[in-house]
Length: 415
Image 1 (cartoon, helix red, strand yellow):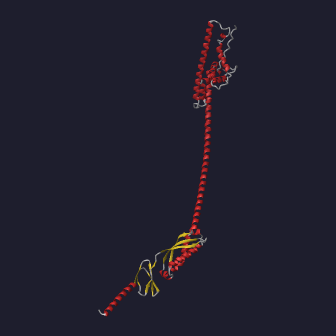
Image 2: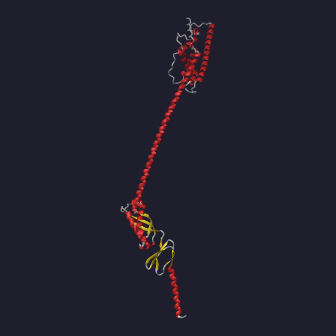
């Protein structure tokens, strides 16, 4: 091959390479949410939008593409002095977005570094006017202050700051220990206050409960005493009514029985052994009617008492038979009177028990009837009734039931 042909071949290869390079530099593809700055001969010519774009090769130069999405930048902890001269470390997080690619390219050389330094200086200005307590509790206020300052400064850079957040605020370790102690003391104080309030409320409620209980107890006692008094009143009325009816029935029975001195004497003699019972009986009380009762018994004995006088007892057997006959007749009369009186008293007791409203075992008519039904009590009650109904010597009442006193037997003849 000749030298001319080789030269032509090289020229063709070079032209092909040039054409390929020119085509590669003329056609640019811009992704979505990206933007490109085109400079023509060193001057800003236009901004490339997403899609296929053709530029003039070797004349137009496309700068590195800018990301139009929202960006998140976390800055390292920065020492900041508070108003009360305490150094705290604050971590910040910036959320920003490029709005104008041309301003972000030509207005500032490095907008990330500019945002960081602006955030640090603004943060120191804001925190310097606050104490530690306010700094720890005013994060929203600090965020708004930083966002306002950054928006004003970065607006001409084509940057929009969406949010500014304080990631951490770390006071010195000694301050943290003091804060923990203070917090613990405050919580202990509140716990003690709450406990005291609980005890106070508990005591108040307990006192109220005791007060109500005492009031209710007093009311209950009052009602109970009233009811007991009413019941006692009714019981006394009923007992008195029953006793009155029982006494009236017994009194009428005694009058209908018409007891005589022989019966009274017999009852007194039956009562004497009962009085003598017991080791503690030292004194006997003999009623005044006892002598009158013995007079009736003496009348019966006086019929044959003459035959027992010294020198007056005849030796005749006929007289002895008469005396024995008289004694038997007197004993028979005494037994008949006693039986009749007991029948009348039994009927009176039955009538008293039927009329009484007091339950058995009380102090009403039933108790009185049982006392009258016994052998010893009958004599004493009959004696009292006989003494109450005994008429005077000049009385003319035929219903008194007192039998005439028999005449005193004549004295036996002398020797």
